[in-house]
Length: 215
Length: 215
DNA sequence: CTCGAACCGTACCGTACGGTACGCCTGCGA
DNA sequence: TCGCAGGCGTACCGTACGGTACGGTTCGAG
Image (tube, rainbow over all chains, first blue to last red; front, side):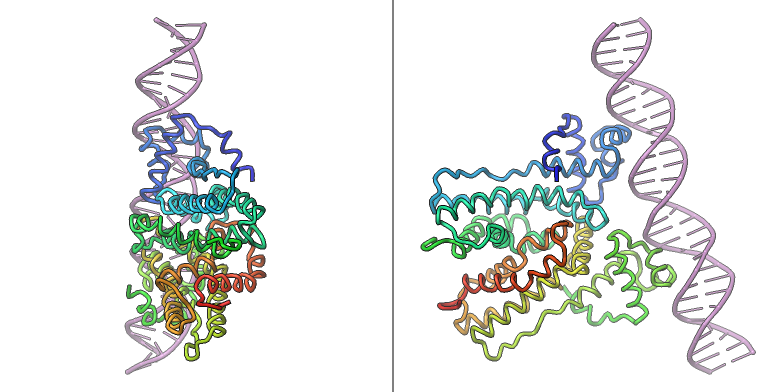
């Protein structure tokens, strides 16, 4: 998918970004509230301009999701001196970023929008979100895991399995419950437990894949 | 939520179930294809009947999701003689059912529909899916876990944490990727690995929470 | 046989929204 | 100062769809 690459080239003027911000706001406020008229009014621009810039409604939607999803940036991790302590810190950093991203309203909205889109024949938005979400994490995490394996800090049959286990241990049922609108999972509720969950997930991951006295 | 209970009372006539089947088929075929006209044509009934039976479009949608979601039934597990071997079999059974359910087209469609619904102000569909999905599993799994803890087969700080870890280890990133329409996750592709994934997840869970020589 | 309830098929209405056209204003270069 | 490109606001069109109305048919009860 050249989508993730295209994002860097497809740069938007400040005015266009203002429009995209308005579109995103409408999406967050009310998922299906993204009508061309509403965006135009919110951004104080004409519908004609919207169609000139983004082609059609789907183009606007794609641009909005792409532009916003690309903002999610995973942390760079220091790979120079890999010891068990640095590895733990790195993993915790990944877990923290993953969790804080996932519980954010923007992420929830983007995922919901992409899933709604995927419920029809279209898969473009799903690909964008996948590419900037799970796949981005995988790309960043796998090298770390493999370096740690080479340094005899971790042991696993395949880095793919290790990555997916890490994902599962961190995300658990939080994302699907948030996407489904579970009222018993308030954002502040989850937020308060992030640090504990991060530590638990990292501990568990190291218990499963850490070599020797990993704990 | 009295929703799950209401389902048992709210029984549908065969003719009504045929209508709901038509509605579900349309949902599966094309998420937004559930127009009243389409359902009426597919089920060979009149729109007037649809409105008489289900009130409005949302009522039809709710009835369809409710009726279908209630069909998901978790396995009953024998709790009489709990030893480590029986526990492992039970956990594998849960993992297998959870995975096979999640990757099914019907489950994907129901979750997508509920998430789309949740993207607007409405949370009823989300609650139904939650109640018949994750929460149903939790209700069934927790007693097993607690019984196993009482039998000194498992050790965990809280059964809630243990349940969520199990969920994460089993589901990993499969569900979100399927919901987003990840093309690299074909159903047959996942299906072929179910048994291996079930075993891995169970092993990992027991490694984390099993008491003593759980493995 | 008759009546009425349930239901099918279809025509119809109102509205919301995607998309287009057009008039007007502003700013800028010649 | 003139002209024009870009863009705002609004009016407008066509369509899709939710919801309603109504005539015709079937079927079972009395």
